[in-house]
Amino acid sequence: MKELIEIFYTGLSNRDAEAMLSCYHDDVIFEDPAFGKLKGDRAKAMWRMLCKNGKDLKIEFSEIESTINTGKAHWEAWYKFSKTGRLVHNKINAQFEFKDGKIIKHIDHFNLHRWASQAIGWKGKLLGGTGFFKKKLIKQTNKMLDKFMTLPSL
Image (tube, rainbow, N blue to C red):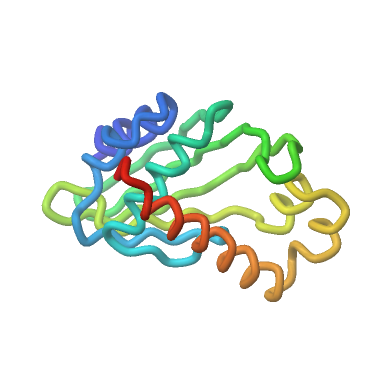
């Protein structure tokens, strides 16, 4: 299953959403602090959106470990946050569960307060660690995802 994780992150590195999504089970559940919990087509659409919009995205991945049922990896992303133009270096630890040779569950853990401080600046530093901020961010990212999913390119 280590190879599956490598294919996934190589796809992300190349902004090739379809390569990434070939690793996902149809019933995948994805979760992270920015989007909350996404299932199936919504999880897949999120990666399509991030690959399409992430023109300056650079990633590195390492520390991949797996068993037949679970896996984990560390990955780091560098990009310019589109709303502010600020540079972000996000450090993420991912956990995976596998079913039928595919990723059925993918959880990304990262420090949302640190991310918000970089992406938004002083307001992010002030509010980025609060539940209020997290709820508002998830609402905004899911609204963007809803809009993306209505585009004819999907």
